[in-house]
Every structure is written in C-alpha cells, then in structure tokens.
Length: 75
Image (cartoon, rainbow, N blue to C red; front, side, top):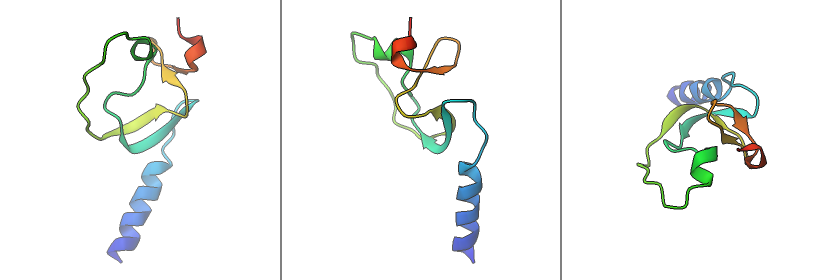
C-alpha cells in the first residue's frame, strides 16, 4: 500500500504543467545550463543538489529572459 501511494505521488509530480520546451523533474540540477553558462570560458562552480521544478528539456538552455531556447538562439 505504501509503495502504491509513493508511486502515485511520483507520477503526479512528473505530470506538472511546464512552459514549452520544459519538463518537470523532482531532482533536477541546481545549476541547469543557460545561454551564459554554455559560453563560459572558465569552469562554473556548482553544488550538486536536487531541485524540484521545470527544467529545459533535451538540448534546450535557459536564456536571460528565463525561456528555454536552443543554444543556436542564444545571443
């Protein structure tokens, strides 16, 4: 019974509505890729910790306006 309840909660959490080109994750990166980070010439320090929320899907990255775009669309 506990396993069934846990599975139901995880399925419900994964079905949260996110903007276009984004997907909900219960354990996403605390330092997701951005237009700024993919063009950085120096390593970016990041603490590895799970974050719940909507994250850019696939190869999309977040731009300065907070929208997930393809890297080719970064300024």
